[in-house]
Length: 115
Length: 115
Image 1 (tube, each protein chain N blue to C red):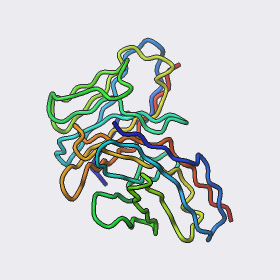
Image 2: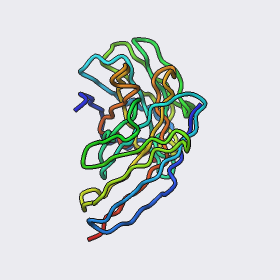
Image 3: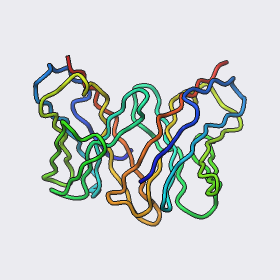
């Protein structure tokens, strides 16, 4: 158990509305990530954070923003949800070092449906 | 930059038979390699990882993988599968010095174990 909690776990929202997904970790990890999972695409990185207020874009960042005001919380916001953002969203934490490499541990996922 | 190709999208196999899930990667720098397993409606669980040293890596649930640098492969094997191994398996790569410790994932292989 990597101590990661995602909320909400399931959400249905309407096109054009803003949506925020929350990721909370209990183990003080510096690195946090948001991935989305879609059939045939595996997992794709949306944004990541390497410290409080330090974030950067991943490969599919358009339409998403993130914030990290505290070590333990990493928020993902869909500014104006579209049907193409219907997906499963996974938060993850990263451990780096000689014994860990760049090992990532995942939360349980948030299922988002945009109608 | 790195990329990952999982050569089989679906692998059906009978219970107690051996299985190999194939993964090739591309990278201009040294890498860390990972296999994750995802059971239905769950997050991803780390099966095993290659950081350095012995090219044969053993993981949980009786799985092992072999790193072949010359063939840029990291194939996952199990000598005898169980029904409970039915899941989706993801291969992932990370450049050793990449900023943020990001993982790049393959598209996944669905392992279906039949009685």
